[in-house]
Length: 636
Image 1: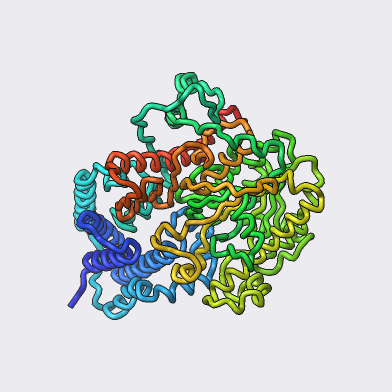
Image 2: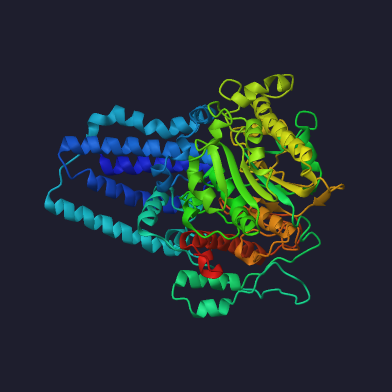
């Protein structure tokens, strides 16, 4: 019996799509099944066509290579989703795709998900069994024309069927034509179509439209707002670039955040802000990490703070924290911003106020192109490779945060006023005692804990951060700088090197999709004697405007995607798949499921927040791609 390639490839791709869908999204709906089937058929016709253009032997070999390639791609995408929660883009593949960064942890992910990984690789075994029975031909001219005609007709039918689903914000028609949301697209149209769209948009460009606001701006004249005088009407009238004009219109219709009782609380102080690698509530222990415990539970205490992981893990975690912009899918946003005007980055703002502005990282200084992005944000940036290796041991992995503080403190602390940024690394995965230098260094402090090895190794790595903070505070106190210095610490992302089951050993996790991102934000000064508890829902996107308000810095809060946590603005947490949380409830975007926290929440409210979340992504991308701030704030 001979097997025709078109039916084989159709069944193989459909099988891969369904296995991926089942283990990633955990459910199916009729709409997704329908669109995945018809777009898979379109792909199958194309593959059948291109594997009939050569001799029989070459056609069969080409077909086999394509099948092997597809199984590897689907498997890599699945592992990447489990690891990072996103879809690998063509940009990431050509820039050292992050799925391949941590081999040991990837092996662990594979072993923990051996059933889906085996199922995704199964078509390769099938091909080896039926290799000699695959039917191939070398098309003549008439057959080629006929197959091209069938391909075009099938493509037309696929496009027509998109009109069957066009109403919701991430409908099939919307994600195919107008919205770049890879997770939603892979759920509705399948992974193959998502990757094809990504490649097309990477090379041909893609602009999304902002959804017009349907509510009046609420401005009370008696109140003060964090805004500056920008004549958006004039800018709109005199702008010829439609993308820029659309962003002008969006910000014109945005409501700024109010100034509040905490405005200017830290005015004139020094600032040390830290993004701590994989920091989480698991690391906060009164005995093992007393400095972290003190800082979390004193100063401002944020009870509903989250650090969602985005598409490029640590790099996007930095980008969101340092710019109050959402990252763009499919690119390295922090690196991409290197040539943009960023007036509201800490470095550029505090430098304009006469502060010494420095940034330090105890990892390789060119990693994620920080040697380009950080100087552009106004920092004198030093890492391992451009100077820090002369002051500390950069050869171990991961490096020591304690050594980084010891090596750098005197470089900035003698200035009259300083703003210093640290990106730590001691808490980096993998969490074991064999391949993690920091975990092994502090192993004796955790060995009697009644937790799994991974949790003990994680805690040991975070002890290094705790001791680094203790050293920093002691050094500030020795120089009489502590009372006049504010410390801000947050994480880049949750410790995704741990299994959720391992995290549950220490912290309560009910919603495994969202609760793993719940975290601590430290905003602390020694002069705050009574903890200030804040219950608003907030995230890393909100840190920059909160700090700028605390320092009494003039800025326009409309131009940032986050909001001052201490203001009266409604709290909103935005996740990488467009899920969200507010005080009224949480929305799971992949399941399209809203869980209310209060009674009588309407569909209009859910739609409004979905629109707000979508717009924040679109506007963030437009700011990044169009270097928008130079248009509105006059940067060069």
